[in-house]
Amino acid sequence: MSGSWAVPLCLPNNCRWDEQTGEYSKARGERQSLYVVDKALERLRSIKGPVCVVSIAGPCRKGKSYILSKAFDQGEVFPLGHFLDPETMGIWMWVVPEKLKDASGQEFTVVLLDSEGTDAVASDGSDDHCIFTLTILLASVLIYNSAGVPTRTDLDGLEYP
Image (cartoon, rainbow, N blue to C red; front, side, top):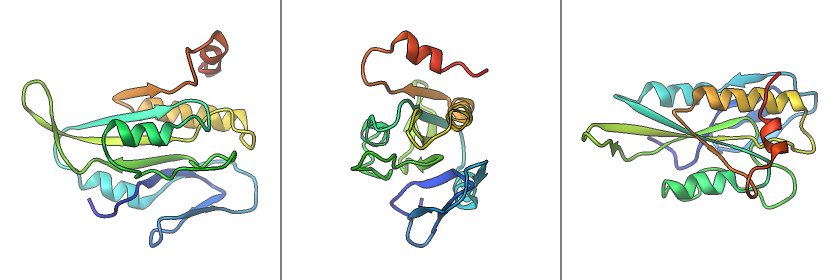
């Protein structure tokens, strides 16, 4: 795979991503929908053979991007924030360059999906539900990252009406 950074798979309609620099910015205006980023689709189409999609979800600002990168020894491929504002918007994707093998010896490609955290101050509850639901639907394996032992409130928050 070309590029040493993750690419957005989908972004909120009020965010723009610059393919040349790898940076994204928020535009003025309300967030009303998500859009799919063509570069991510190109990367997915270039994969040959079986795929395992590993997604991570959970509360904002709890280290999801860092954990996902480290769990697969990929360096810092996802943008990491250092402030209170969430860094990840939408869902970002990284294709692990090295193939892995399953128990029977068959090779497969791992695709990592880093999702926007839930319960962000600037977020709307419906944003959380859309991104969380999409993250689950795309995952072969889902990692739910929490700040500690999940509470009843955490589990109630996972329900989508």
